[in-house]
Image (tube, rainbow, N blue to C red; front, side):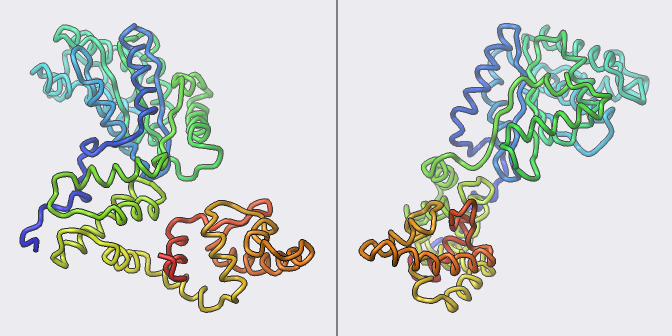
Length: 394
């Protein structure tokens, strides 16, 4: 019995503390970091949908770079003017130098008598030359404190105004002691995260009087999506639970990783629900039964719809869905019929396939099944599991 359970580790929002996986994405950054140290920085952008771990990834880059003579800075943009956004970048670097070297740069920036170091606070609009001057000034002050290189990670970078993007490119052209990583939130992913991120940068550059060099300033894009493997997703859960008196069984960990679609935000949200239910019920370990109760509550609409679908299925449709779930990939109807009825003649299989197609097309109308180029799949992880338990396939 847990009388005073510790704070739910799935609601702790300390970016970077529970970072796992993303090995090749981190390696890409390390390659750019090596270029920075050689005086040839290769600026990057990262792109991904909501909940794919962009902020945690940026914090990992800060932790990776903030050693020795490299200063790591995290700047978060708000929805403000280009001038405000440029000021945010400069002030974020200044604040980190203050923290590392006990300088008083922010105090100088905010001085009512006027800053002695910076140009931007003296203006009411953004000028590239002012931004260049202020970043150069910061570089020199940081270098005098033993911080010869600076990595600036810009979170919420999709908010950046085109003119601020252009000014940043112009300011950085001759400042080889900075490496910039810009994070872009994608609303939809159509052509792939890297391509969609580049298109977003091009649109912003187009708004800055067609300064497409502002887009190409970022030499390479890094996609962030779901964890690439089930193992990585499970590691994310185990890392959160490490050292906690409440644990999850291996089955529960695997189910959370699967049902979440391996998306970090969903892993954390589902894991938090399971943890809270386990704690409330006074257990030390989340079991499959606890997970099922949590799933049915959290995804009550999808589960209810799955039960409704089950009640309307013919025996052929039920068998087709079971086979499709078992195969776990997009499948043509003919292949599905052959898998279901391997011993009947091919002519009969074609007749059966026509009936199966009609059933699956009706399923597609319910959003529980998708069809692309004649191939059918139950691909949404939550709806997939809702169907599995509705059909008693736990």
